[in-house]
Length: 458
Image (cartoon, rainbow, N blue to C red; front, side, top):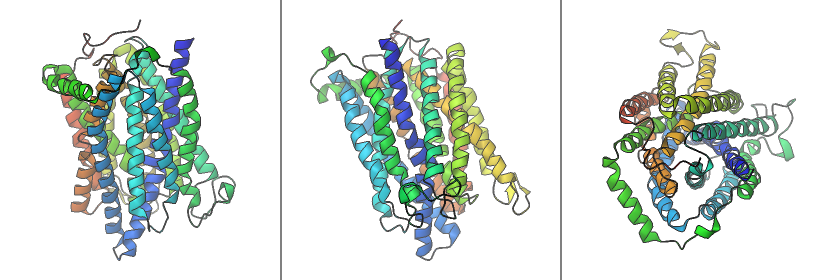
């Protein structure tokens, strides 16, 4: 029962943390910030197309900078944390900063007067969210045997996405304003008397995410107990020394090295797809935040279902085949998105006011959510097969580094292509190449990982 409660406690982290990605990154705050930034630039005299492109570039730069901080800081902090024999105290610290910065996003005013300050606050919130993710991922090897890890990982993602769907529904139905200033429930005013003119319903997403996280982390901290007898004094020098030894040994660990390089590209592409999918819908298809939220519900529900299914496939076939299939599907999805606009679908003109572009993007949403969730779950499972329980935080720090060392790549490439083409739609095209490179590098990855470094907990 104790182990079962620990697993459920670990599941609740995904439930508590998922709204950051669903609400802040992708479907509400990110698109809202894009609108604020675009209107800010139009206020400077730019036309709508150029203003939209600049808004996307600003968002890209923020994600590129924070990605570098996450990527290079994660392994160092993880290696140092492993010398202490504890992870919960670190998670407490990161969680506190995360909650405070999420709460502060309330002050992102629609006139863009403090746009740069709020972008910085979001960046800090993003870094703290990713650092907690590194440390909770490092707890996965202790939750089950090598055969069970894939199913546990998939179930965790599935449970988290259910929380993401529920949080998105609450925001859309009770807070986020439609164009008429009313919510989706019987055209009511936003809850708590929030001012629709000042977009207070939409801005409430920051405090909502902070409150949600604080409440649902309670089961995690109650049930994820650590062995207090192995706590040691922090040794920064030893942690950095261990990390350096691991980095130097990577070329000799061919499977791990190939996997980290592969995931570096396909996870960068996936993050780009998540991050810019919402801004694409707003800037290219002229979707409202409400319509984007409906899209998010579809994507999140499919993510929950496919993550659970992917966990069973992981247990049956192993994580590598799951990664290959999902990455191929996401490559096709990116190609479809690049060839879809308000006026054309794969070069074929559509009638003005046609719903076809919207329907195509809704279909893409099913696969973005479903395959994206499954890909993340299987990737986490395959990383467990390449690490040891004693140095799991360091291992997942390297995993974060592989996912973030080139985190600037997707946003930067999108920003460059967008700037050159002047078209936010064409700007998404580099993601196709990143996915393909990731697939090719998987050829050198051992499907069972490095069995000599994995200690099962049968």
